[in-house]
Amino acid sequence: MNIRMMYPFFNIIGCVIFLFIGWGFTRNDATISENTFDYTIHPVGIIAWLILVALCLVFSFLIKRYNKMNPDKQIKTFTMTPPEYIEEDEMYQYATMKATKKVYTFLIWALPAILLYIILPLPFSEYGVFFIITVIIIIQNLLYFFEMRKFKEL
Image (cartoon, rainbow, N blue to C red; front, top):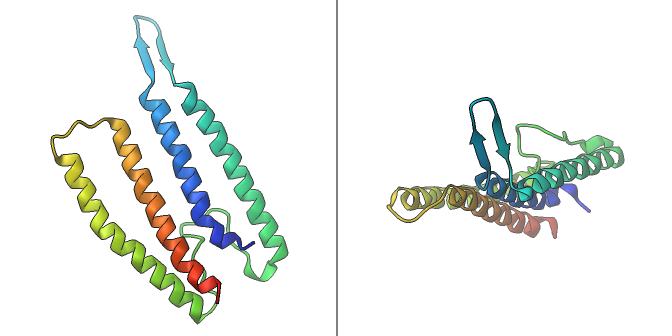
């Protein structure tokens, strides 16, 4: 099991969890009275937060295990550079370049289309923003995964 090939799926699962967190927060109920402030979150949002914490713990465990098994190719658990970049040699640098180029091309077309959709006077809710962003992230991670998989099979 190559942990770097699993990163896109951790991203997808995390974003779907955030989708449910967003749904829970947009279904909240806030009441302000003279002396109190009551705020309740839909149970789906709370459960999604707990699942997200569990996912982060599993992710951290897998990274630690990978680093123990591969001391010469250790990866950081949390870093600014996307950890799915596999640049061990020239072939993987090329593969990463091709995969990120496809994702960039997708984003160049998707983001203006989404902006246009949000600007148009269509029925739209704040939850729709969460949904659109989640779909974009899922598609870009799948594009990256399928491109990198071509090179991992070589």
